[in-house]
Image 1 (cartoon, protein in one colour):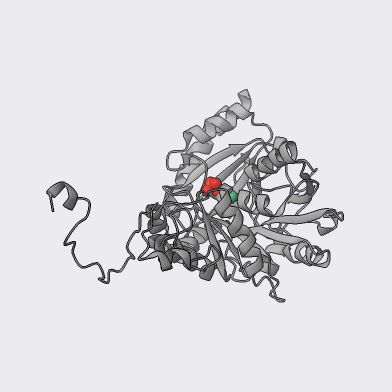
Image 2: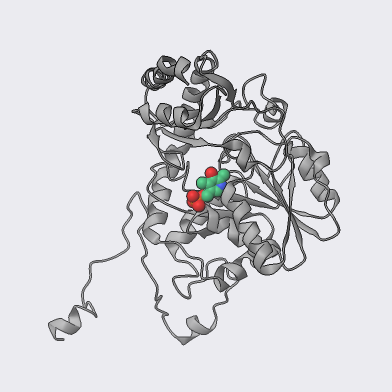
Length: 399
Ligand SMILES: *Cc1c(COP(=O)(O)O)cnc(C)c1O
């Protein structure tokens, strides 16, 4: 064999079946069949279908099985981002004329995605108040309700049990975005005392499971084979696939996730009183505080007192948008950026009134700042917030 050919058809590669602690990474578009029988006897609904890279490789199935186990489900499909996982659910179960309900505090890009489906495909979006299940009033056309616990930015924990029971009574599919809970604060397939289960659990693996701010991925977990098969068909037909290297990165981070989550929850809880006592801050938004509008629902569902590492504050209304920008710019350890779940603390600012369709009497007036707590020492984070708030204090009178 000429060297050129041997570089392609390696005549004596090293023995491949060794045990390493991390599973090997299978980078594949083409998957080679042993013979025509293997080619012809496979089927796309097989649990492990090895046909082509987009269908799956040992790298995607190994991670998918771990995510399904972690979520307490049975089947998992991986998507290249959390938003792509949301798209997979919406485009599998919604068709023209169908109604879908979203909480008012839904992850913004999910709402934008549904608006796109409305404009292009005639889907009908409706909005409910996550703290009041009576505002969820499905019509006969309703196919799907999205739940999100806790909701984005304002972090209300919804009346999960009330909403799920109502959806089930109407035969409506329930999908939860449980990125915040991460299967640690509550289990999406065993919620509350009655162990209520949603139909579909979506998780932005980009956040806690990745833990590093360097991977984008999402998962869709189900317990029901028929639902999974419908999702699987869309997954194949839309060409949704993930990189094996990204799978390996997330897989490697999973064993430390519960410890990271617990530490970030703890640091976040330690910041609550400190934030509450600052005159520049009008309101602290976190479901574990006794005066939070969603506290009872958090208590009902998150019995292990876990609450992620996110806290939002509403700045005193005397501060303009420019003032709040100056505060955020003065932070040193908190980096300005979207997402969360990594070692580095992050901060983001929002004009919350522009993002909500319903009126919410539980939210103070003023601009919102969200802190995503990383793994730094709490005393350093406090000192950083303290020094940045002083930028505002000095200028109070001139604004
Ligand atoms: C980040 C996030 C997503 C989307 O995940 P990406 O991987 O960034 O697309 C979805 N839902 C929630 C609640 C999120 O925080």
